[in-house]
Image (tube, rainbow, N blue to C red; front, top):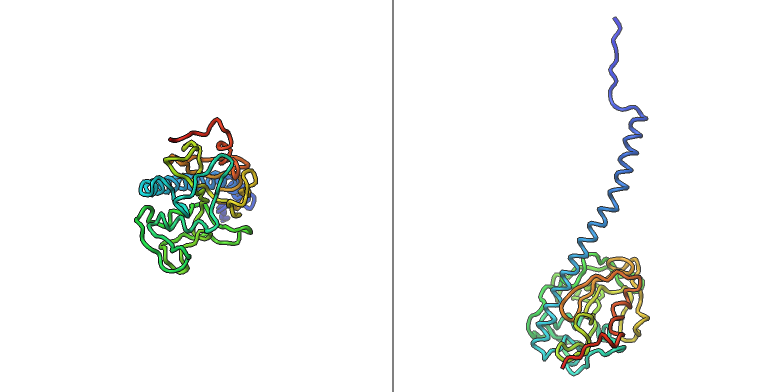
Length: 246
């Protein structure tokens, strides 16, 4: 008596077809999944900037309208006189918002001044991975201010700060005056003139051209522009948009 064999499993051709279909589906779904993840991170980044904005406005309320600056007598930015960053670095401003003040000589212990932003992790954008002119600094989330090593704006912060505003006397319209934004991996500081800021490259937090911006009125907007490094300052270069606050 002859026994019939049952066909079990896939033939080689069927297996290759299944693999090809799976590969096509993965290729279609993966970019969309990455986009969804990045969109969620961008939203979280904007929420963090809103929190930073609240802390800055609280600070200004206790310091005669001044946002954190090296000297309270520092004048606010004027048209075509932008001051992104500061020679002493962003860390100093962050410490003041945390309720800590670095002594004038840069050494010694941190002195408490009040609490405005107490969580150091808020300064790291969820999408930020590297920093530095050559993208060589790995970004990490700081859990404390005095850890080992201590908080550092190049390693633990993802935002550039435009110093010098006073919410009571500034001439700039609060809704167009940038205060914080996703930083370029290259240093943005007062020695670089408007129109010549380092561009945001593919290694920046959200890739080329995209940055979230906190404005003086506390609002946060997404700026998607090939030259977003300079575009955040463009509205301030139009005299018709400058508002005088008595």
